[in-house]
Figure 1 (tube, rainbow, N blue to C red):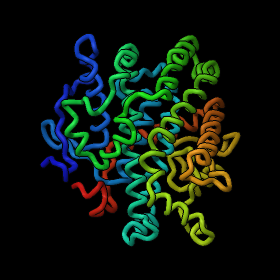
Figure 2: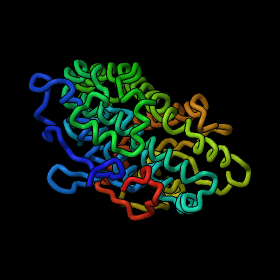
Figure 3: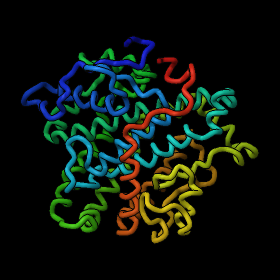
Length: 372
């Protein structure tokens, strides 16, 4: 049963993602179709046109990581395998959402959530809110470009969830939809314009080369600029406003910087791999870890992980961006190296298989704003 206290929603727009271009339908219809696609990716099909948002925080973050990985790998809707890598941020985004999933899966997170210790229940809810609504923003821009760059350019200025007449009720019933006013109802930003404005140049350079290595080398400056523009969109325009400015999340991360809690808190290192546990990746780096999944970490020229610099204040945008920029540059350096790129792509292919993840752990009364 759908409603304001439910995670159920009904598809009302055309479900054929290949059938709508502004030549056949107007911009609002075009935008709604791909907003609905994003909603479907994090929902479970019920019957007919009925869906239910996946309630589990970890499972949803895994699904989001999977979509990001598939967009990078050009295996999502409208993808073009000859342009693998043009959506450069998406690979890094997949590793980031995997890290979010890891946080939700941690036993320490579950205990803290159940006890409310250090406002952890509210803090984790804020974390889940950011993960979900960033996805609702950034994935759709990529779907739109893959569907039609010309239509993207024509319609981008009309994106505004308040005008999505067929989807408005379903969107507004999603958890934390009240945050839409804080992120301008997913309207286009200067960072999106800049990031996607680089895609014609990236695509042209890719098409002029025959090997993946030569494509990445030819477009390397554009690729790095692209990822940094999207990073600002992600961190400043979305996450800072709806997650990091949340008082409970701020208090929680501040408490974790204390001497004792810093010793027992979850390791904040971002692993550029499919591994949850950074220690597992470090074993693989030494050649003593698992085999058969993902890439060869031992042969890499540098470590495929990045820890926040000492003194990083995560809730402070400028402080956090020092680390984010470091991560982006490390990712870029690995992508420009043949062994590094092969490793990252292999890891992304593992993450891409997570698209049907379902929650097996905790879902509490306060999860998803109490919606069921």
